[in-house]
Image 1: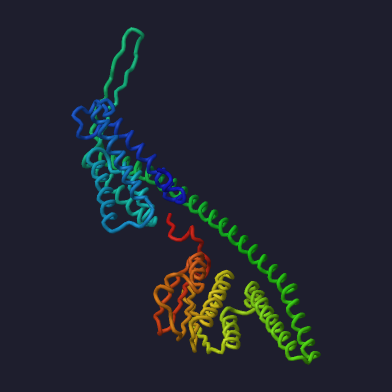
Image 2 (image 1 turned 30 degrees about the vertical axis):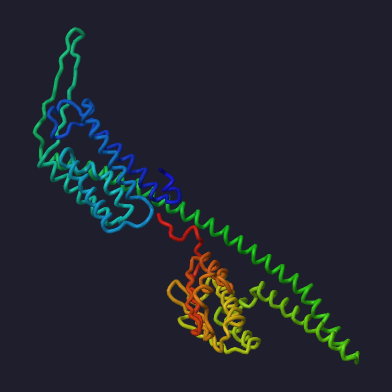
Length: 426
């Protein structure tokens, strides 16, 4: 049963506290005769039917509380059911005992859904109801005392119900109400705040672990980039230089042709090695803001693709989480690569928009577009883009029709939201 509260410490605290208070109310109703009881001198605990009735009602109440605390949002009709059931509990306790008994149950559960000022208003209302009801329907207890006056003679004295002083009785029940409500809410508030603090600490620890892991990944990428640059790139550059020298020294057309082919192959390898180095190392973002980095990326892409690219900035630029900025850059790289290889487009529009708590990236081309099967299959690197966006807690959409181009839209938060936090609740 407690599995539903594993990652929800606030709900768990409310459930435990409601159970303890409900047990207290149950014991009170088992030991104190109700107003409608035929024999006020006997306690309900002596009557099996009364015990069964009260225990069943307590179990039903707690099951409703657990149902109310389950994960997810409550619909309007569920809220109405909870309110009606809570009112029923108050009415039953008011009719048979005193309204103050509901203070250990109703406000505790209400605190999970409502802010503290609203709950305090509910407490004040129940306190006023207790004071008024204590005068109208006083709950009197009969106390039986046995006194031994001499060793051979005993006398039993039974106190009869004494007519209650309205002012004294009102003051007494108001005092009990304030004491009971104050204890319940104060203790619950401490538990809730401790649970929230513990939950925030656990979330921070997970984020630190994720940040440390990402830092390790970036460090490994930079190491690989240095290795590629120091080995493959340098080797390809050396091969190109030597082949160009050999081409100038030899006069045979066949030899020149072979050397030219080898040179072109070496240059392609060098370009690929440089592309890998540039893709692995995010130095393009070091020292410059993201909009400027995207503009540099588009300028470089135009020079190698012979396609026009336009950049539009909307909103006021501001620093984002490094992983968000790097992901936006990588997504743009992948999208431009797709346009170059598959779209046959003449123009690409890249729009970066800064909103409140969000950043949007839209990439639109006027190419041949994609059919629905290709768009939904996750080809052309779309699956990796979608997975990257969803891993950060963002949204990815793709609109494309054959002959009408393609629109790729990405929405990301300012800070990464790990998957285990998306859709979470207290």
